[in-house]
Length: 141
Image (cartoon, rainbow, N blue to C red; front, side):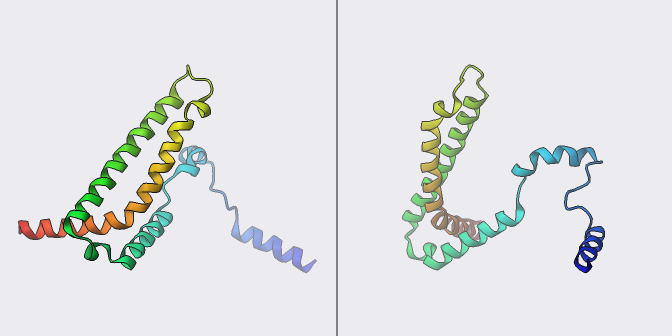
């Protein structure tokens, strides 16, 4: 009885965990909550990337030409990912294709490989880009 009373009081004090659906914007957000930008996750991923890059000392162990090649490959890979994501969106938007999973299987496999390659290149490309930017700014002024 004592536990039930405590839980009831606690439930009344804390209220609902779901947002109020009286506001139109909150009603719409219930449908898009899964794809909303997650700032905390983004910051955590960025911190982990920077720690990985710092642990290998990439910008200081690679020559200028190698850094340039890594950054170029990273940018080409990112461009290719964007293009394939666009093709995937077009494929899923095409009403004439009935089995979208089967039709997009090859494209999704290519994207998975490119995401993996991008993840490999990111710790090397990120600090190299920063150092190249700083050097460019120093040369300008």
